[in-house]
Length: 498
Image (spheres, one colour):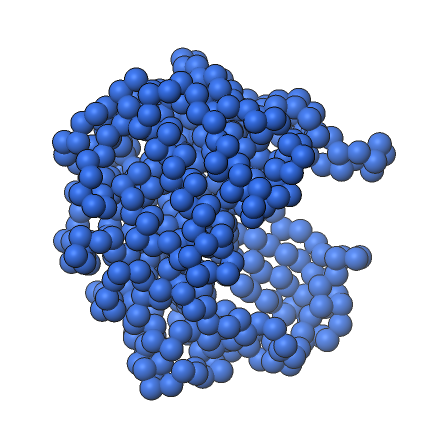
């Protein structure tokens, strides 16, 4: 990324940022501001997301240290420091927390979250990393918060896995900021094999009539009915999973959200493409992994295939470098160096048409050096303002002038950010049930085979809380949508969306 990607986050300057790209008229028609508060319908072009400051405060970044602050090691906490640096250098995340927008969306009543404590601690960390002048900051406050809610990550000051830490942090922030106050109950438990088979058949018939994109979008709608936050908007995509019975040929197909991709790695691999290819390769389920076919009503050998259906604005890739060696009965680290350009075209790996660009820039890399159970974590991040690469080694921060050192055999977790046709970051939309045109699927108000079904579902739920068995099976294995899907579930400080 070049300069200007942080817009008005130029050093100690609150002037208007440069425009990254123009906003379409359809985007402008859904912009809504409510008494100066944030809204889930704001299209996040780079300019607008830095103008949504709460309480009218001016946003500024430290001229001397902004984004170049080290984190003190509190005792084997390099895994935490590396993960925090990576996430803190994703530009939309910084915009969201530094402008104070997060405060408008904290769900402190969510029993799956931390009552907002994790979100507030992360926001304070952003202030220290971007707005203060110290060379090093102690992440003790956030570490203490983790000690309260995730003691398995910090107790005893033992070395932990950076990917596991990031998975917890992203999920924890999502639950703290989940706009869904009342989740519809999951309907997947307690169903019989015959009911599952009937649901599969109904979905197959609807897919034949409406197409896979229709089914995928309805599954996404079910997901948004339970999970709606900035983390969903930025980090979550969708996979298609197909399991085929080798006895009767029956196919079970689901569309599932994902927060990150865990790619298998072996010593023979030479490139990131090799890992992606193996991740998407068809596999056979046999032996102890046999699949139970609800048509055959028995365990059978089956073929399983995973495909990428939708990519998120920020794609997190976890390289599975640690495997269990049955000979030594120990875990070992795979040191393969996976080569890749820092700009990656992922269009060949996505199985459906995309509304957005499928070209991504590598933005951050969490590195691991050493062996399993020990070693050391560092982070390599591209600065969103000056576009330079920096290596974050706990409290030490050094510029990296040789970009060939960004992706090495130490790369463990990668953060890729989608770019537009101009090479700048694309706009990011805050998604809502009542505006399916903001979903990653092929849905618009003017041209969509799906939209009438969404409108029909909304109309049905105005009359009744329930849905037909056919529709229920379509939108996620009998998961009922909310009683009023026109209401953006759990919006804080926003009226009913239309």
